[in-house]
Structures are given as C-alpha cells and as structure tokens.
Image 1: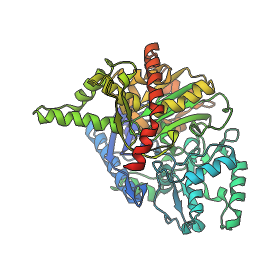
Image 2: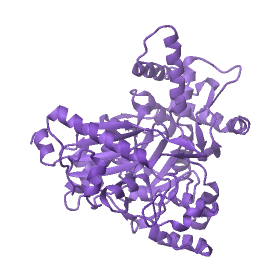
Image 3: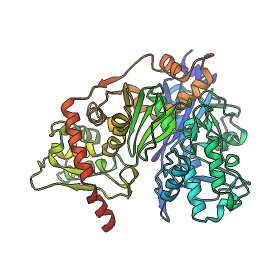
Image 4: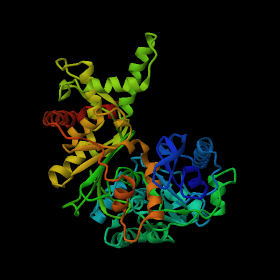
Length: 529
C-alpha cells in the first residue's frame, strides 16, 4: 500500500506532544515511520511566583500544529486528512491541574518547573516511606492544603497536562502508567495507584472534612496497549478547527514525556535506560527490583507498561550552555561574520574534546532554576576559576558540557555506586546529542556506562507517543511493548554506541568533586544576588 492510500484508508497513527517550548504533531505510517509533522512554539511564564501556561494556549497550539501537519500531508501526498487509525497525547509530566464538579479550572496550572512544595514533599515522603518529589501532583495538592487555599474544598478532579488534553478530546478521565506515576506512587503489582498510601493520605487530611476522598479525584490508570477512549464530536472540533477530521478515532492512554522518551529510544526493557538532555535533563533506568531505601535524589516512576523505573530528574541542562554559544555568535557577528548555528555548535562542542579531562580546574553551575538534588531552591548561573586554572576555549567549553550533566551524575552515581543497579546500555536523545559524538562521549564519561544514539533519536516524544498508539492499534496477541518496539519499530537496531573512556571517566569524577565542593559559592549567589 502506498503512503497516500494508507493515509486515505486510516492506516496512519498520530502522536502529539506538549514539550516545554514546542508542541509537535507527528503522523506515522503502517511501518511506524514519520511521514508528516507540524509544530507550534510556546513558552511558560512566571506569574505571581508560579511557572505556568494558560490553558487557552493549549488549544491555540494544538490546532496550529495539527493544521500544519495536515498541510504537510497535502503538500507531500495530495491527500486531505479526514481520518486516522489511532491518536496519542503526551506532555510534560507532573504539575497540578484542579477542576470542580462543573469541569471549571480552579487554579492556574502549576508546572513541573515549580519548586514551591518543599514542605509537602518532605511530609509526604515521611508519611509514605516513599520519595515524593516537589513537582508531583500529590505534593502540589497537599501544599495547597497546607497553604489553606480555598479552592481545595471544591476539587472534583486533578490531572496532568496530557490527561487534561486527552479528557477534552475523548471525555475520558484516564492516564497512562508513566504519567500517573508522576502524580502519585504506583503499586507495580496492581499497576494502579498505591491503595495503602491513598488511605494514609486520606487519614492525614481527615480533620479538614473535605467532601472528597483522594481516589475519587484521581484519573483512572491504564497501561500501554489498553483502549483509552475515542475522539468525540466536540474533541474533533477542538483538534481540527476546519471540521474535516471525523470523530470515533481510538486513543491510547495519554502519557508523560518520560514514557514517550522510553518508547522513542527502545528502552522499556529491564537493565536499559535513556537520558533525555535538552532544557532539562533526566535519566530513566528500568529496575530489576525495588531500591533498598528511599533516596531524595531518585524518583520512582514506571514505564508505560507499568514496570518500575528509577528516575534522576534535573531542572537544568543546556540553557546556560546555549546562552554562552549565543555570546560567541554575537562576537562573530560583531566582526561581520555570517554565523550558521549548527556550525557554531559543532565547532564549539568539538573544541571541548581537546580540553583537559578534568576541565583544567574550571568550574561552572548551569542553574537557571532551582535544583533539588543539590538542595538549591533557585538558580544563579555561575562561571568560576582560580588564577592558576587552565583557562582556554577548549576547557571552557568542556566545563559547560560537563556541568550540564553534573547534577545528573550526582543522582545516577547513587544507582550505580550505592545500589549497584546493573545497566547494560543507556540511549541518549535530545538537543545535546545533535552534534555527533561529543555529547554522547561526555555522557558516557559522566555515567561510566555505554551510550547509544539512534538515527531516530531526533524524532522525540511526539514520535514516541505515536508508537504507543501504534502498539495499542497493531499489537499481536500476547505481544508486550518491548517485543513490539524491537520487532516492528527498531528491527534490532542498536544505534551508534560509544563506550566510556577510562581517562574521561576519571576526569569527570575529579570535576564532580570540584562541583560538589564549590556548591557553597552557588548558595551565596542565591542568598545575595
């Protein structure tokens, strides 16, 4: 079947992901290959001390990227897109979106980026004996209770961004396992929210006499492959403002960006993992068993199939690195040079490979925002050196690359050195890996683990959620997610692998000692600037 006929007959699958700076739609064919796409730029904003997005912008953005995707279909294949085989919605995980019984929004969307729930996070971690990160939905809900916020008594439903969009398109209040695991802890035996912890939470707030119990206001959890509803007439109008798209299209469970990253990198199997490195950075490692104790630096979430995953999540990665590259761009333009950003990034990144393994005594902190792993509630980007540091361009760029993965290494070392978690391979994806070899080799040194990057790594989370929708639609009887991805998507391809170099690993270890020892400098900067 040719591509145009496949589009006409509904053999395609659509994935839409809401990233932190871009909403993207990717249409894939029956072979799970991308055939059309569209995107829309958007940005969070700081309102009254809270990082948020206006929900009106959600619908402006999704309609814009959908229209652009259909225009791409028309231009390439001369087909008007009227139906699709299946659809999946993904978005940034965590955060807080509360609604009342009339489905009215009760408070502004509080995103993953906020670090305003420390009190709730610490209390719930003690109550549950399970690490509850600040960005999780339950931490936001409990902090609102501790704050005495009036809206809490009226809550009838809380969800994530992906859950919200899915609900409006299908009428179903459900959530995929990975995204759900960033709202409240999951029992990996039942693949559902942990009932013992739900009961502990309800007991904790009983004296408030709210007219709801926690289970009543949470979405229903689903695992990969389950039917999560269908596009309603109202949903079709929300998605396609032209009215061309027909209702009735099946949806897979809505997922978080961590889950789609696992799907897009074929890292849903035990002893595999992936690192997504862009504005933020996180590592996901699929565990063979529970960890021996609670680590504030490590989050426990799940794969889309419901298997336990240790997650090291850091708020900051490439923002400061990009800012420095833009300084070099300004410098070049001041001399009248025409600058190609791909060439500039490539040149500067490769220069870093010429630097000293430990960055020559230089030190940098890339903290645009707070970083919980090192107990910083706000960020102050810093570059520091001593008079006898080896200050040159190669060492400077190597420092920027290594510090972008610094806090990630701090968390990952707990898995590797404290828990002895076996990891056969890490798959890298995201902007840090666009320049071949460089980001990949720095990550291999940071984690002391082989790192692979696939040709498809640049497809991102929109492709990942499309794959999860394809799995729901096309899986064979008894075929689990890992089998489906390996057989029908990646065909056994392992990607380009870089193994850790012993000298690079030793150099990163030296750098991270300097990084940790210098944290009081960052603390003073936060307190005084």
